[in-house]
Length: 106
Length: 233
Image 1 (tube, rainbow over the protein chains, first blue to last red):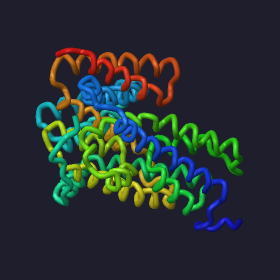
Image 2 (cartoon, chains in turn blue, red; image 1 turned 135 degrees about the vertical axis):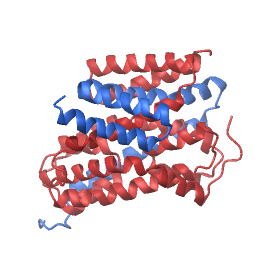
Image 3 (cartoon, rainbow over the protein chains, first blue to last red; image 1 turned 30 degrees about the vertical axis):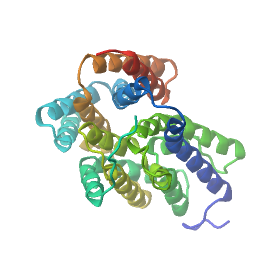
Image 4 (cartoon, each protein chain N blue to C red; image 1 turned 90 degrees about the vertical axis):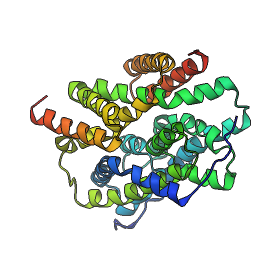
């Protein structure tokens, strides 16, 4: 096996294929399963609650790891979104706040 | 309980692609950093591009590279696939939540489109869904743009070492969580959301303290969904 930029190790290729397959089956699997189950009113409400629950569960550990600066930036983002209702402004404000807080040494 | 009047239009695709613009700096930075990590770990260019474009799931790629070692043994391979599955488990829930919207769309369209499912384009699309849109071009267009940008951005990262020496200096690392926080705002409707988010947050925090890693997304999300299903307004 040469070390050229366009060479691919056989075992590594197999690993990538397996990782792709497992990720795709998760991407498609939840959708597929829900097609086999009757979507009841309870289930619809549960699915409706999922986006918020996933967001909260995703950002909370990020805040706990990132500390005060990250927590403040996310509050800035949520506040900007609440006031101006534009995602791009919210994201821009948060990035600006992060840069400023770090320059200030928080 | 499946939605009728579900459409797919070019206008929706373009709208979805345009809505991605604010998050793209975060996506570019993350993919570039992955390219740098892959180069440092000794992957060839083609190996890096293949992994990045085929797996197409940021966090899991980084965790898999932590596990990676050269030469790659069968044990390491299984470990890489295992951590990828663990980090991406939340995709099951994300995909499930698209069923009411896309259930009427023929499978030959939805199943290829599900390859492009990420937290980001799902969130964007669900935001529009809540506002009443049923054009799933928003999901598809945003997914395609994320995949293209993700696939291209790894290249400069691979060759230039780290273009941006420290993404933190420019606040690039908070773009994705900030986008998440912003998307949470319009989802709030009242008591049902407050309680289900508190439950999701509590379960996620406990899981994170006890187990760490990415399990907290899965456990918190399931707890929040159950709370949402059984709570009355």
